[in-house]
Length: 242
Image (cartoon, rainbow, N blue to C red; front, side, top):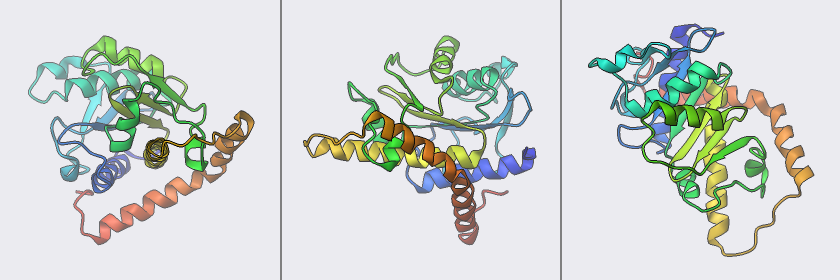
């Protein structure tokens, strides 16, 4: 398991990289990473801090079982506490949670049928490994809504949130970042394929399953990709490690 400082550096890098990929939104959206063995203590960006300004030291350490901070001037965003607090409290395997409103994932989430169909390698990566929530009820700022989202996400690596955006979970920051990267690419493929107006050539069930499983052999790719991306930030003189 990584130390808290190592997690801080990697999570801060994820913020900067998501900003560079234009997958952020104003001073909204949140990323978090568990620091305790049970997953209940976690790091998250402070309320209304732009992704481009997040540093390792600026990340807030929170405890999902202690909501007293919500009554102070250091309270995180209510919607972030609702989603991340509930998931970290109940799903210990979801050590990293990335929630964004990236362009193509959000567009896909607005369709009557937001499902990602297996039409290429990237879309097949998520075949039967992603959950869908089409019961949008406004900004997720209540504890009840957070619990409902947590229940929907359980057992899956990602959630398409209807009329909202996406949430990705993972065991490590590198793996969650890689899934977020490929999920947005998969959503872009779906949106562009739909835009042609032509029938989609959907892979058969067994082939889609086989393709999804074959992605597991490339788990190491996520670490190589993330480390090289961090190296690119370092070459630019990024302050994310501070």
